[in-house]
Image (cartoon, rainbow, N blue to C red; front, side):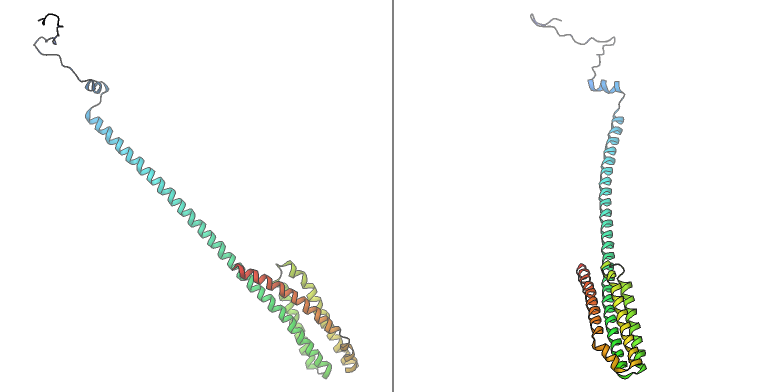
Length: 231
């Protein structure tokens, strides 16, 4: 039927053969049916997305933990290496300190044994006793052995090593002079030997040796102070 004059007629949906109306479908429902999705499939997809997000979060956390652990291990390795290096340096310094003390002790033995040898030589010049001559030879031998120890202990120090030949030369010159003077005493008597002693050659040679030993001792004391400060 037509409405009032001037109005537009609204067409109702045509009825079917059996009077049923045509079904009007929601656009989302039509799109869902066309894409083949179902509520179940959407639920599965949602669960999968949540699970993937959880895996990604776990993976990121694990990576950060792994990086942190690697950094900690690196720090520990560096600390261990530094500790070992410091320990080795301290051991080396301790060894060098001990060696410096040995050098100084050996230098002192050189001088003390030579003084003892000189004393025994003077005793022989006065008395002519062969016992003093044997003791003189023993003291000279001890002095030469002390020089050998100094040579072995200073092999890593060019300055000290360069002084060793001069030290050996002075020891040999002194002992040779004392032996020659003793031979004069034995062959020509006390007066001839006393005349040689009065010339002062032995005193000058001993002063030169003492000066050289003092320089060597000062060098070792300087090294000792440096090594002690580093400790």
